[in-house]
Length: 152
Ligand SMILES: [Zn+2]
Image (cartoon, rainbow, N blue to C red):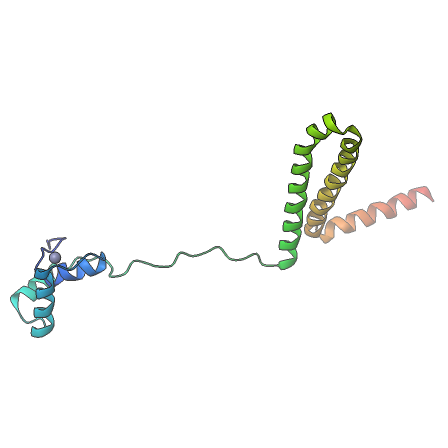
């Protein structure tokens, strides 16, 4: 069973220092020089190689980022929605103060709030209907035709 951690003064330890971004001490520096000079024929180098831990030299450096949103149109809708929601939140926060200090403006703000809400609703419904299937639309058309037929 190979030793997991090579002691200082071995080439393995030298490489471990590099891997761990540790300061290479004199003993390990000497071991590295010896390793390079003798091209690994010494017993020390063979022992060091035998003791080499089976960990990968470099850990995976990159973290996979989530793929960007596939369509820009969808992103625009989302960001517009975000802006409107933020606006609504601001209106919500402002309303109590306005109600006390300027009731007339509070009334206007409430109407504005309703507008914002409706716009949010429209965007959300637009997003939903974009996903609505053709079958839904056909069913609707069929229902309309049936209603007309029943009326005639
Ligand atoms: Zn060392």
